Image (cartoon, rainbow, N blue to C red):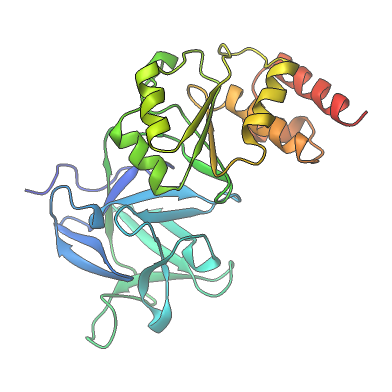
Amino acid sequence: MFPPRRGNDSLDAGDTYLISVFGTNEMLTAEGKNVCLREYQEGNWAQMWICETSSDDRIGMRNRHTKMLLGWGEHHGLVCAVPHFRVSEWLTFTWLSVGGYSLKVHCGDSDKLRPIQRAESKRWPEFKVGEGCIQLGLRKIRDSVFRRFEWVIPGHLARSSAPYYDGEDADEGINETSIEFLNNYRIKNIISLNSVELSPRQRGWLRAAGISYSHIKTMEYTAVTQEQFDQIWSAYDKARATIVYCGYGDGRTGMAISAIQLFQGRVLETNDYRENGVQCPSQMVALNALSDRINR
Protein backbone atom coordinates (compact mmCIF):
# COMPACT_ATOMS: atom_id res chain seq x y z
CA MET A 1 0.00 0.00 0.00
CA PHE A 2 1.09 3.56 -0.64
CA PRO A 3 2.10 5.46 2.52
CA PRO A 4 -0.52 7.84 3.98
CA ARG A 5 -0.81 11.59 3.25
CA ARG A 6 -1.63 12.95 -0.16
CA GLY A 7 1.64 14.76 -0.71
CA ASN A 8 1.49 18.27 0.74
CA ASP A 9 4.53 18.02 3.02
CA SER A 10 6.85 21.03 3.15
CA LEU A 11 10.44 20.92 1.87
CA ASP A 12 13.20 20.94 4.47
CA ALA A 13 16.90 20.49 3.71
CA GLY A 14 18.26 17.18 4.93
CA ASP A 15 14.91 15.39 4.88
CA THR A 16 14.07 12.56 2.50
CA TYR A 17 10.98 12.55 0.26
CA LEU A 18 8.92 10.44 -2.07
CA ILE A 19 7.84 12.39 -5.17
CA SER A 20 4.65 11.11 -6.78
CA VAL A 21 2.11 12.09 -9.37
CA PHE A 22 -0.34 13.72 -6.97
CA GLY A 23 -3.00 11.40 -5.60
CA THR A 24 -1.48 8.27 -7.17
CA ASN A 25 1.12 5.67 -6.24
CA GLU A 26 3.26 6.47 -9.30
CA MET A 27 6.67 7.53 -8.00
CA LEU A 28 9.57 9.40 -9.58
CA THR A 29 12.21 6.69 -9.73
CA ALA A 30 15.87 6.90 -10.77
CA GLU A 31 16.97 4.18 -13.16
CA GLY A 32 20.52 4.98 -14.11
CA LYS A 33 20.46 8.58 -15.23
CA ASN A 34 16.84 8.31 -16.38
CA VAL A 35 13.86 9.40 -14.27
CA CYS A 36 10.83 7.14 -14.69
CA LEU A 37 7.42 6.59 -13.13
CA ARG A 38 7.11 3.34 -11.22
CA GLU A 39 4.62 1.91 -8.75
CA TYR A 40 5.50 2.62 -5.12
CA GLN A 41 7.80 0.03 -3.54
CA GLU A 42 8.38 0.22 0.19
CA GLY A 43 12.04 0.78 1.04
CA ASN A 44 13.12 1.37 -2.57
CA TRP A 45 16.01 3.85 -2.37
CA ALA A 46 15.68 4.69 -6.07
CA GLN A 47 12.34 6.33 -5.17
CA MET A 48 13.78 8.39 -2.30
CA TRP A 49 14.98 11.96 -2.83
CA ILE A 50 17.04 13.90 -0.28
CA CYS A 51 16.41 17.64 -0.24
CA GLU A 52 19.53 19.77 -0.04
CA THR A 53 20.50 23.38 -0.65
CA SER A 54 23.45 24.85 -2.50
CA SER A 55 25.71 27.53 -1.03
CA ASP A 56 23.38 30.20 -2.46
CA ASP A 57 20.21 28.56 -1.05
CA ARG A 58 19.04 26.86 -4.24
CA ILE A 59 16.95 23.73 -3.76
CA GLY A 60 18.08 20.38 -5.16
CA MET A 61 16.87 16.78 -4.85
CA ARG A 62 19.49 14.02 -4.65
CA ASN A 63 18.48 10.41 -5.29
CA ARG A 64 19.31 8.18 -2.35
CA HIS A 65 20.28 5.24 -4.57
CA THR A 66 22.31 6.86 -7.35
CA LYS A 67 23.59 9.83 -5.26
CA MET A 68 22.92 12.07 -8.28
CA LEU A 69 20.89 15.27 -8.51
CA LEU A 70 17.55 15.66 -10.27
CA GLY A 71 17.65 18.20 -13.08
CA TRP A 72 17.05 19.26 -16.65
CA GLY A 73 18.93 17.24 -19.26
CA GLU A 74 19.26 16.59 -22.92
CA HIS A 75 16.11 16.20 -25.05
CA HIS A 76 14.33 18.57 -22.63
CA GLY A 77 13.62 15.84 -20.10
CA LEU A 78 14.24 15.14 -16.43
CA VAL A 79 17.46 13.29 -15.66
CA CYS A 80 19.39 12.28 -12.56
CA ALA A 81 22.96 12.43 -13.76
CA VAL A 82 25.34 14.82 -11.97
CA PRO A 83 26.81 14.79 -8.44
CA HIS A 84 27.17 18.54 -7.90
CA PHE A 85 24.96 21.58 -8.37
CA ARG A 86 24.87 23.27 -11.74
CA VAL A 87 22.22 25.67 -13.00
CA SER A 88 20.23 22.76 -14.44
CA GLU A 89 19.89 21.11 -11.00
CA TRP A 90 18.25 24.14 -9.35
CA LEU A 91 14.61 23.25 -8.75
CA THR A 92 11.59 25.33 -7.81
CA PHE A 93 8.62 23.64 -6.14
CA THR A 94 5.46 25.77 -5.93
CA TRP A 95 2.57 24.78 -3.70
CA LEU A 96 -0.74 24.57 -5.60
CA SER A 97 -4.05 25.63 -4.08
CA VAL A 98 -5.63 22.41 -5.41
CA GLY A 99 -3.01 20.37 -3.51
CA GLY A 100 0.50 19.19 -4.21
CA TYR A 101 3.21 21.06 -6.05
CA SER A 102 4.33 22.10 -9.49
CA LEU A 103 7.98 21.63 -10.39
CA LYS A 104 10.03 24.02 -12.50
CA VAL A 105 13.64 23.63 -13.59
CA HIS A 106 16.25 26.15 -14.66
CA CYS A 107 17.04 25.64 -18.33
CA GLY A 108 20.38 27.04 -19.39
CA ASP A 109 20.43 30.09 -17.14
CA SER A 110 19.28 30.96 -13.64
CA ASP A 111 16.53 33.36 -14.76
CA LYS A 112 14.61 31.03 -17.05
CA LEU A 113 12.16 28.65 -15.39
CA ARG A 114 10.27 25.99 -17.29
CA PRO A 115 7.60 23.68 -15.85
CA ILE A 116 7.87 19.89 -15.90
CA GLN A 117 5.00 18.01 -17.52
CA ARG A 118 4.32 14.41 -18.33
CA ALA A 119 5.52 13.30 -21.76
CA GLU A 120 2.90 12.47 -24.39
CA SER A 121 5.21 10.77 -26.85
CA LYS A 122 7.46 7.73 -26.54
CA ARG A 123 10.27 9.61 -28.18
CA TRP A 124 10.45 11.78 -25.04
CA PRO A 125 11.54 10.71 -21.58
CA GLU A 126 8.62 10.19 -19.18
CA PHE A 127 8.89 13.85 -18.17
CA LYS A 128 9.73 16.81 -20.36
CA VAL A 129 10.07 20.54 -20.08
CA GLY A 130 6.94 22.15 -21.45
CA GLU A 131 4.45 24.96 -21.03
CA GLY A 132 2.04 23.23 -18.64
CA CYS A 133 2.92 21.50 -15.39
CA ILE A 134 2.21 18.19 -13.72
CA GLN A 135 0.74 18.08 -10.21
CA LEU A 136 3.23 16.34 -7.92
CA GLY A 137 3.01 15.15 -4.34
CA LEU A 138 5.82 15.47 -1.79
CA ARG A 139 5.73 12.96 1.06
CA LYS A 140 8.37 13.31 3.73
CA ILE A 141 9.91 10.12 5.07
CA ARG A 142 9.88 10.67 8.79
CA ASP A 143 12.80 10.43 11.20
CA SER A 144 15.40 11.91 8.88
CA VAL A 145 18.89 11.80 10.35
CA PHE A 146 20.62 15.15 9.88
CA ARG A 147 17.86 17.76 9.78
CA ARG A 148 18.55 21.19 8.24
CA PHE A 149 21.48 19.77 6.28
CA GLU A 150 23.07 22.16 3.80
CA TRP A 151 26.40 22.70 2.10
CA VAL A 152 28.28 25.87 3.04
CA ILE A 153 31.07 25.02 0.61
CA PRO A 154 29.75 22.33 -1.75
CA GLY A 155 31.63 19.09 -1.27
CA HIS A 156 33.85 20.54 1.48
CA LEU A 157 31.91 22.07 4.40
CA ALA A 158 28.35 21.26 5.50
CA ARG A 159 26.20 22.15 8.50
CA SER A 160 23.12 20.61 10.08
CA SER A 161 21.31 19.81 13.29
CA ALA A 162 22.77 17.03 15.40
CA PRO A 163 21.84 13.56 14.12
CA TYR A 164 18.35 12.64 15.38
CA TYR A 165 17.96 16.03 17.08
CA ASP A 166 14.47 16.40 18.57
CA GLY A 167 14.80 19.37 20.90
CA GLU A 168 17.64 18.35 23.24
CA ASP A 169 21.40 18.05 22.76
CA ALA A 170 21.25 14.58 24.29
CA ASP A 171 19.07 13.35 21.39
CA GLU A 172 22.26 13.08 19.30
CA GLY A 173 23.04 9.59 18.07
CA ILE A 174 25.29 7.74 15.66
CA ASN A 175 24.28 4.41 14.14
CA GLU A 176 24.40 2.59 10.80
CA THR A 177 21.82 4.94 9.27
CA SER A 178 23.60 8.15 10.26
CA ILE A 179 26.93 6.75 9.05
CA GLU A 180 25.25 5.80 5.77
CA PHE A 181 24.02 9.41 5.44
CA LEU A 182 27.56 10.72 5.94
CA ASN A 183 28.99 8.23 3.47
CA ASN A 184 26.38 9.21 0.88
CA TYR A 185 27.73 12.77 1.02
CA ARG A 186 31.35 11.57 1.26
CA ILE A 187 31.70 13.36 4.61
CA LYS A 188 34.74 12.08 6.52
CA ASN A 189 35.08 14.63 9.32
CA ILE A 190 32.68 15.75 12.09
CA ILE A 191 33.08 18.86 14.25
CA SER A 192 30.52 18.75 17.06
CA LEU A 193 29.76 21.72 19.33
CA ASN A 194 27.08 19.70 21.11
CA SER A 195 27.15 19.87 24.91
CA VAL A 196 27.10 16.04 24.99
CA GLU A 197 29.94 13.92 23.62
CA LEU A 198 29.25 10.73 21.70
CA SER A 199 29.76 7.52 23.62
CA PRO A 200 33.00 5.54 23.16
CA ARG A 201 31.01 2.92 21.27
CA GLN A 202 29.62 5.48 18.82
CA ARG A 203 33.04 7.06 18.33
CA GLY A 204 34.35 3.58 17.58
CA TRP A 205 31.73 3.11 14.86
CA LEU A 206 32.86 6.37 13.27
CA ARG A 207 36.53 5.33 13.37
CA ALA A 208 35.64 2.02 11.74
CA ALA A 209 33.90 3.95 8.95
CA GLY A 210 36.94 6.21 8.46
CA ILE A 211 35.16 9.29 9.85
CA SER A 212 37.07 11.53 12.25
CA TYR A 213 35.23 13.19 15.14
CA SER A 214 36.15 16.30 17.13
CA HIS A 215 34.00 17.23 20.12
CA ILE A 216 34.30 20.86 21.23
CA LYS A 217 31.88 21.05 24.14
CA THR A 218 29.79 24.22 24.07
CA MET A 219 26.64 24.91 26.05
CA GLU A 220 23.59 26.31 24.28
CA TYR A 221 23.53 30.11 23.89
CA THR A 222 27.14 30.48 25.02
CA ALA A 223 30.25 31.66 23.22
CA VAL A 224 33.16 29.54 22.07
CA THR A 225 36.48 30.43 23.69
CA GLN A 226 39.49 31.56 21.68
CA GLU A 227 41.21 28.26 22.43
CA GLN A 228 38.16 26.41 21.11
CA PHE A 229 38.20 28.52 17.95
CA ASP A 230 41.74 27.25 17.35
CA GLN A 231 40.53 23.69 17.94
CA ILE A 232 37.75 24.16 15.37
CA TRP A 233 40.20 25.40 12.75
CA SER A 234 42.69 22.63 13.51
CA ALA A 235 39.89 20.05 13.13
CA TYR A 236 38.83 21.54 9.80
CA ASP A 237 42.07 22.65 8.15
CA LYS A 238 43.42 20.02 5.74
CA ALA A 239 40.55 17.64 6.59
CA ARG A 240 38.35 16.05 3.98
CA ALA A 241 34.65 16.96 3.61
CA THR A 242 33.43 18.17 7.02
CA ILE A 243 30.06 18.55 8.72
CA VAL A 244 29.58 20.94 11.66
CA TYR A 245 26.66 20.65 14.08
CA CYS A 246 25.61 21.49 17.63
CA GLY A 247 22.01 20.80 18.66
CA TYR A 248 19.47 22.59 16.49
CA GLY A 249 22.23 23.78 14.17
CA ASP A 250 22.11 27.57 14.51
CA GLY A 251 24.01 29.55 17.15
CA ARG A 252 26.98 27.34 18.05
CA THR A 253 27.17 25.90 14.55
CA GLY A 254 27.01 29.43 13.13
CA MET A 255 29.93 30.42 15.34
CA ALA A 256 32.04 27.53 14.04
CA ILE A 257 31.17 28.29 10.41
CA SER A 258 32.00 31.99 10.94
CA ALA A 259 35.29 31.10 12.64
CA ILE A 260 36.33 28.87 9.74
CA GLN A 261 35.52 31.67 7.30
CA LEU A 262 37.56 34.15 9.36
CA PHE A 263 40.55 31.78 9.46
CA GLN A 264 40.21 31.46 5.67
CA GLY A 265 40.68 35.22 5.35
CA ARG A 266 37.11 36.40 4.89
CA VAL A 267 36.02 39.73 6.37
CA LEU A 268 32.74 39.27 8.25
CA GLU A 269 30.41 41.81 9.82
CA THR A 270 27.42 41.52 12.14
CA ASN A 271 25.00 40.76 9.30
CA ASP A 272 27.29 37.97 8.07
CA TYR A 273 27.32 36.43 11.55
CA ARG A 274 23.55 36.58 11.69
CA GLU A 275 23.20 34.99 8.26
CA ASN A 276 25.40 32.16 9.53
CA GLY A 277 22.98 31.66 12.44
CA VAL A 278 24.92 33.34 15.25
CA GLN A 279 22.37 34.32 17.89
CA CYS A 280 23.84 35.94 21.00
CA PRO A 281 25.76 39.21 21.51
CA SER A 282 28.43 37.26 23.47
CA GLN A 283 28.97 35.02 20.43
CA MET A 284 29.46 38.04 18.16
CA VAL A 285 31.88 39.62 20.66
CA ALA A 286 33.93 36.41 20.67
CA LEU A 287 34.00 36.29 16.86
CA ASN A 288 35.09 39.95 16.66
CA ALA A 289 37.89 39.16 19.12
CA LEU A 290 38.94 36.26 16.91
CA SER A 291 38.92 38.51 13.85
CA ASP A 292 41.11 41.07 15.66
CA ARG A 293 43.52 38.30 16.75
CA ILE A 294 43.82 36.89 13.20
CA ASN A 295 44.39 40.32 11.65
CA ARG A 296 46.94 41.70 14.12
